[in-house]
Image 1 (cartoon, rainbow, N blue to C red):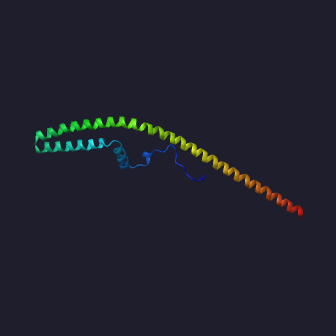
Image 2 (cartoon, rainbow, N blue to C red):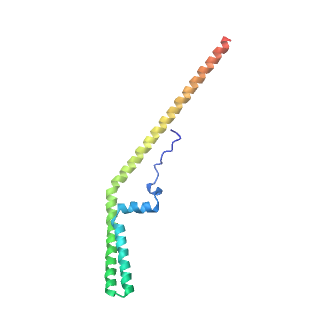
Image 3 (cartoon, helix red, strand yellow):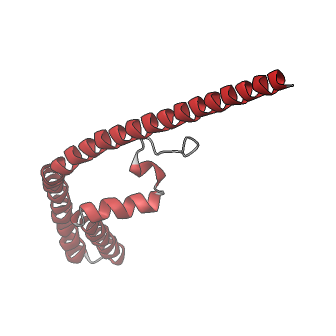
Length: 142
């Protein structure tokens, strides 16, 4: 039991994730932000295409959409952050409580392990004492 490695309460779950996993994780938290970024990128590409072909009204149309989509993305980011903070702050508190509970369980397991080792040591000492007495008895009988 002592050789078993227990996870630390200081472990960061995001630390073990790759960049792509982090991107997917954050996109699931605030799905409107990546969608807004993709839509803004598409608007910029369409505006660049309009400029390149010389179609000024179409380019102007897409540049206006780009501004609107950037605004949408910014609003989604701000309100998503506010929502995420309110919705998950309670969960973070429970994570802290779970970490404290986990630390108490580890402490209890460690104390049990120490008690087990202490009992084993006392049992070995008792057997050694019995063996010594048996040897002394045997020497006295001879």
